[in-house]
Image (cartoon, rainbow, N blue to C red; front, side, top):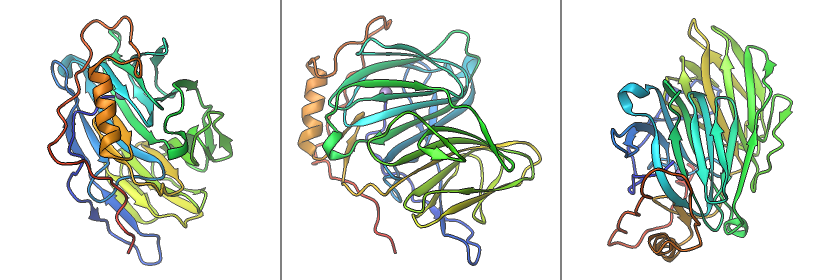
Length: 326
Ligand code: MN
């Protein structure tokens, strides 16, 4: 995914209804961001926003669809660079063709993890396939910790087997949940899972109390630890919970994505498709891309030009961290 939004400060999230004796859940709302391209498919972004920069090392959550590609034109993101981060593509429906500068050519399909490590530098294109009619999923980014942010390019694929706990069907794509562990390693402790919740069901999932969590609701009205979330909302829970209780309050199956990780303590500078630690890191990556440097390599077989980087702002890009906890 390409980030066309170079001003990541969105609207502040509101506080949700908070049940007495339950963990505090901050309800973060999405804002619509055009992806670019001919007919400008748009996505719903819940991270980053003013109220929150990171959940664990998760630093970017885009949620899209279900979109009829006959209306939106689907996804067509020309070759663009990444540095200092990993991208996770996770679909609920549709199919995306991924090509990157390692020479990987992969089809991203529902229920299958595709994790690309940008590290020092990679470039890729993402195009929904002609047989896609409904495009629906999430695109997530993971910030790499300082000691690994210049690691080599990598690409991993994993198809989790669904596991059932109570009224939930769980697909663990990163980390461990519900007795399943993804074989795909991470650079910081992380969790990523899709949850399908039976109608009118309540499920309690044991989680790592060292993790903070975010629950993104795709479909249905879901109560997390007492706080109601509507589709497209992201519920944020601080570290310190050893269980999460989820209730599907609708008469049809609900779907959500659960993300978690140990709080990411480093400040990051995130601009366009780059993550660094300073304005200079970003400016250097931008120049390398504009100069077609080997840092990002080439994507073969994309029909069209690569994406130019936007202009840097006149002001120095400031590092971001999470707001102080009260
Ligand atoms: Mn991308």
